[in-house]
Length: 248
Ligand SMILES: O=C[C@H](O)COP(=O)(O)O
Image (cartoon, rainbow, N blue to C red; front, side, top):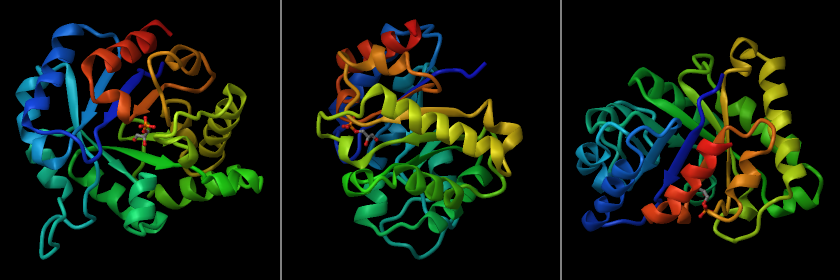
């Protein structure tokens, strides 16, 4: 049985006052019945540990593939773990696009995350041009294959399917399109080197998940939760998504 995961990615949003949103979430869900994760900007990570009250897990939004060294502006996986993080998002499309991250580099980062004891949330997803060209499954399949090193297990890795064109746009795929990709990802895992972990690995959907569409997305086969951007910034909105996930 896969434990459901509601993951919030605050991206480059949030000041110290916003830590109150995490406290509110923790108080609202003392025994949530699913896993709750917030990935704040690195400046806020340490302050979130007490705010999460053992209910809201904390995660980084990226990590370097090295443990330490001369890499100005970067954060390593051991640093995230030292700050109290349990998870780290890797290979988000904004990292792949803004920083030119390849799947090969993502795989190196996943290995670094696991070595530090972190659960990696590995993102895959097609652009609108790729979907219109009919290459969605080829693209996400190649990203999946290239981003997972051999240390991946169902316990240390989560896959997030995020169509790039659905992120922050208010536009979501049809439920059939979500199901098609999630079924494909599960089958791809089952067919390859991770067959023993395919059934247990959590698959999240991400891209314009909101309180009013969460329930139908969570009712879709092979969707084990969500990676939420904008709607995770306010506890009231994210709380409704968590409720929908717990009820699914
Ligand atoms: O990591 C989160 C995703 O990019 C989704 O963002 P969004 O919910 O604002 O569309």
